[in-house]
Length: 207
Image 1 (cartoon, rainbow, N blue to C red):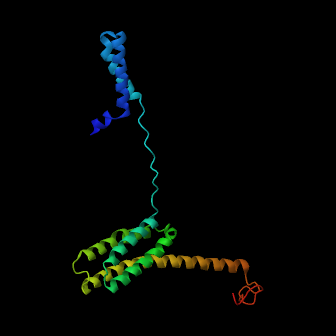
Image 2 (tube, helix red, strand yellow):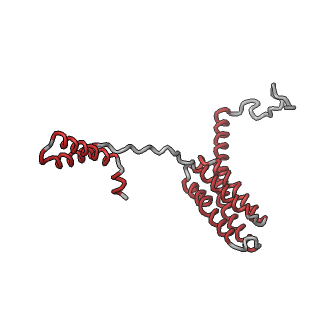
Image 3 (tube, rainbow, N blue to C red):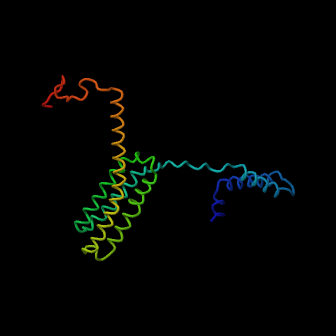
C-alpha cells in the first residue's frame, strides 16, 4: 500500500525522469562505466529535492455545539414520535424538548459552568437517543408498563435540564436585581421615577 503510493508520487516521477535523462545522455555522448551511478544519483536528487504537495487546509467549519445538539434532539424526537408512543411518553418528550431548546438558546450563559454544558451533551447526545432506541427496539413499546418506564426516564432527563434552565433564569434575575440596585444608588428618589407612564406626554392609551 505504502510502496504503491510512493510509486505514484511526484517525488518518484521526478526522480525517474531525471534518471531517464541521464541514461539518454549516456546513450548519446557516453558517460563511461560510471553511468549507472550517475543515473542513481539523478534519481535520488530528484526524489529528495522535489517538494511534497501541500495539503489543502481543512475548510469545513466545526458545527457550533447548540446547533449540533439541536439537530440530534430533533432527530431523536422525530424517531420517537413516528412510532406513535402513548400520550404520556409524548408529553414527557415534549417537556424535555422545551427545556433543552431553552438552554441551547442561552448557551453563552453556561460559559462559566462547563459541567452544565457536559450535562447537556450527555442528555441530548447520549441518554436521550439511548433510552429512545431501547424503548423502540422492544416489541412491547406500546405496552403501558414500558410507556411508564420510558416516561419516568424522560422525566429524569427533563428535570436535570430544568435545573440548568432554572439556574440561567435565577442568574438573569440576579443581574436584573443588581441593575435595579445600581439605578437606585445612582438616581436616588427622583421625582416621578416610580410613577406610572400612563399620564406621560406622548403616551397614547389606545396604542
